[in-house]
Image 1 (tube, rainbow, N blue to C red):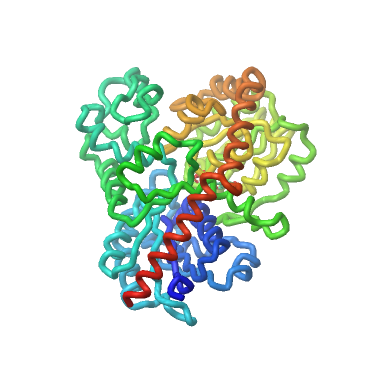
Image 2: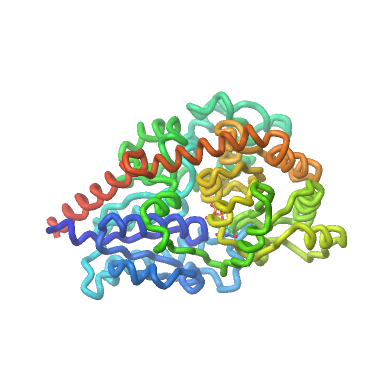
Length: 478
Ligand code: UDP
């Protein structure tokens, strides 16, 4: 049958958060009966990706392929230098990607030709041009929230309404934004994605984000790692522009629901996980520990590091801190009192098994940069968040956490040690009952979305059918 020869190519933007959730989607598609999948990594990430060996053994139709990302091996690929990836991918990866598809290089080992592409929708929209040229249907995957996607789609409207560029001084950042439909009652200028802070509406990053988002309307469909009950309003606004929309999240929870405990894969990490923190957590009382992680791209200044560290230590709570290699700019000289307090009640690792950490009963709060994966993982675990958004979509995610879902607090543009301490105490003591209750309710709603009869489960089923239909149609025309 034509449908049995579906061969899907999955192509993420090559950074940890995007690779992780697109691998989760790949695994779900394998589990749902898509027979052939190729996951296209950058060479750089491919060398670093740590997968359990049983992953490939479980899915004989799954393969990795890789292409250069155009940057030298020692490039940091983090902080604001992450944007250099955009230019290098466009110059180096794009023509190689086109050649790969035109020459049929992925049709080896008895695999049928690629007949569906699922490509990252941010910074990778060139895949739409290539897919149209080679006549393969393309589905766009956005690893951000639906609310962020909807706001990006509204950028021309924001500019037309005179809301962008943001005018005035810092006080104006607290004003309400009226030109993102559905968010009038809570969205402030400081909550807009960081690209919107550009002083000039023709700013390159702002224009790239707006253009790339608009291009998604040319894709066959759009996949989002979210669920209807979490972002119903934004999803219904997007559906008016992109009716073929699949909300299939939270992908991590979905995999947990689909896979038996014994066969769960532990990692899709680019860094080696330090699992010693699990034993340290075992020895801590329930809900006593603050987990601190700023994700895979954030780079803190030395001053920011010290403010967070003093705030944490002054809060008196035990803490587990992910100090990712090269995540702080400049020299680090640790004040004696911080070193002593950390020995007494802290534990520091280079990279943690985050989803397992968040699910540990000792965790009472998550000090996070509000990356979308981290936000979803915390929601699924029912852990309240203390948010310090760094850039991109994170400014919006933190507003939703603090004001819409009420599952934490939003520090926004400030990380003064007094504020850090106060926010930690708010979540862990003063407002604990209230935020914990909302967090637990949200975790339950997320679990239902991915369970039998749930909204994301239904969306994934429709997506799989859609892929089978479109690949069957393409095979019939070959
Ligand atoms: N992560 C992890 N261990 C760590 C820190 C982060 O496994 O010590 C994972 C985390 O679970 C999440 C991803 O890295 O899935 C980070 O993605 P996110 O979207 O939160 O932020 P980004 O790194 O893209 O800024």
